[in-house]
Length: 219
Image (cartoon, rainbow, N blue to C red; front, side):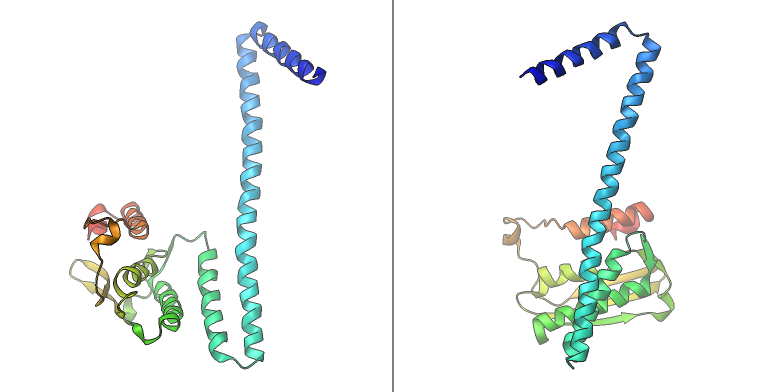
C-alpha cells in the first residue's frame, strides 16, 4: 500500500516538474523518453525476429538428419521426400529474396508436386512445359506454388485430375499459365456466391501490382 502511494507521489512530482519546466526543455525531455521507448521496441522486435528464425532452422536441420538416417536405412523414397521437403523449407527461409529466377520457382514447384503426388497417388498429376530460355527471368518469389495449390484444393482435391503449368514468351510478354481439368469450384463452398476469396491469389496480385503494373496483375 505504502509503495503504491510512494509511486503515485513520485509520478505527481514528475508531472509538476514538467509543468514548471521550460517548454523547450520539456520538449527535449519528451523526445528523450520517446527515443528510449523506440530503443526498447527495436530490441524486442529483434528478439522476436531471432526467435522466428530459430524454429524453422531447427526444423530444417532435423529434416536433414532424418534424410541421412533414411539413406543409411536404405529407404530411398522416404529420403527423396524428406529432401524435397527440406528444399521447400530452405527456399522459404531465404526471406531476404523477394525476386528470384523463374527456373528456381519451377524447381520448387517440382518438389512441391512430388510431395502432393505421393499424398494423392495417381489421382493428381502435374505437367510442366517451361521454356528453358526463360529460366533466368526474374519473378516474384512464391508466385507459382500458391497457384498450383489453389488448383489442387479447389479443382482436383475431390475428383482428381491434371495440373498443367506453362511458361512461354508471347507477343505481349512472358506468360505463366496454370490450368487444371478438375471438377471446378463449387459455389456452395463460399456460401452460395460465385465470388471466392483466396488469400494466396490476392497476395500474388498485390505483389505483381507493386512490381509491375495493374494491367499485368489483372491478366
